[in-house]
Amino acid sequence: QVQLVESGGGLVQAGGSLRLSCAASGRTFSNYRMGWFRQAPGKDREFVAAISGNGGNTYYADSVKGRFTISRDNAKNTVYLEMNSLKPEDTAVYYCAAAAANEYKYWGQGTQVTVSS
Image (cartoon, rainbow, N blue to C red; front, side):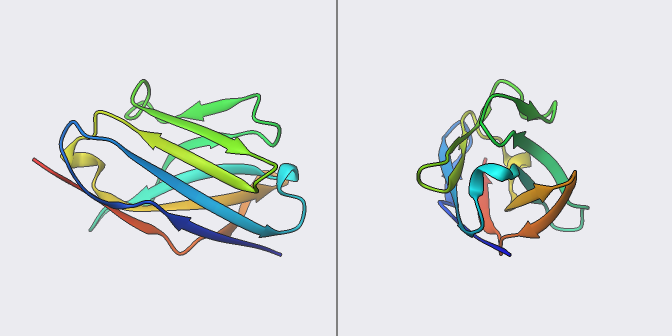
C-alpha cells in the first residue's frame, strides 16, 4: 500500500509559476513510476507528466511540454511538478499517482490549481 499526499496548489495569475509536491509513504518509493494527472470541471481526468522509478525517464503531455517539469527525490519519497508560464486552461485539480506493473494503482486526494487571466 502507498499513501500519497499532494500539496502546493493555489491561485496564481497567468504567466506565473507553482510547484506541486507529492509525498509518499509505504513501500519502496523508487519501485514506482510516478505520474501527475489533472481534472478540470466538466472534463475527464488527463495525463500531465510521468517519471520512471530512478528518475531517468520523463514523459509529458503535449499541452505542458516546455512549461512543466516533473522530478523526484527518492531519498525524500517525494515527486514534484514545477509549473511555469501557467495558463488559465491549466486550472484543474492535480493528482499524483503511483504505478506498478503499468497500472496507476495509488492516487492522492488532489490539490487545486487555479490560474486567473
